[in-house]
Amino acid sequence: MASLWPKVHGSGSWRKDLKHVVFFGDSFTDQSRAHSISNGTYPGRYYKTIYPPDDPSAEGRVSWPRYFGFDSGLPYENYAVGGAVCSNDLTPGFNVPAVSGGQLDWFVEDHVLANGTGHSPPRLDIPGANTLAILWIGTNDLGLHSLLAPNATEGRTYWPNIPPLTPAVPPIAPGNDNATTMLDLADCQLGSLQKLYDYGVRNFLLLSTIPLHLTKLYSAVDDPMFQYANALNALLQVGVREFSQKRDARIEYFDTYKFFEEIYLNPDRYFNGTAPANVTGHCHQCPNATDWRYCGIGDCTWEERDSYMWWDELHPSEQTGRLLAKEIVNKLEGRSAY
Image (cartoon, rainbow, N blue to C red):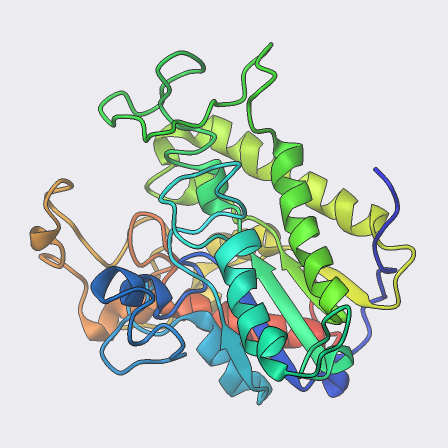
């Protein structure tokens, strides 16, 4: 791969240089955009609101960027959309605004096209040298209806009772030249940061995929999901190093996988609700998997919520989000092991 990326800096503090943060990703990061898009006239009445009063996130209530804002004191904008992938051309999935498409378009609309400066090439209306872009994507790219998708002609069907989406994504398969590959997914993430660099952003934090095999949703296919997540993360690490030689910017990799392993293996250090710490179950229950109207029956209590690592079969809990936000701030201050 060609060397196109800024030099990776050491683990010193860079918090003092930052004045603005933008988030891109999926439901692990989204607070309101997915619900707003699905519940209103596109793009929906709340899609730019970082914390609407009546729109809980996929983590149960508050998404982690809001806690990041509290802990860091930095203003931020959250472009993440629940259900998103890096590129709908690679893994169409639920076909919501992807990082490389709609989410970057929103950023451009807010900070490039709308500034009226007439720069060619276009430039930001915020200080790029003091702006941090945080990208956390990959869960939907790897998972259900994507690289592990049922497919009519190729690959192994891990969920035989779930019909394929149209178009179905060819899973990784020997001899399949048209299949989306791990390298495609890694290139998409780095390419999305490259686009932000081209507009003038000069600080980047790329979060790795979590250990998805620890979630209830993927525990039944823990072996391929373990391999998939680790393969993508290895490519991202190599990509950050290899693409980090020629630009005057700061890009770092946050090992979300390792961080989630730490809290999974040492739950009593991190979970403090009224119930015993729980990293294998989840708070939010849906007794009938085919009828959302039953969801919520049997949920943990408000007092028990902070005992759980997971909100539901896939999403981290609000307490896990608090922990992540604090550790990301530690990363920016040069005090994180991840």
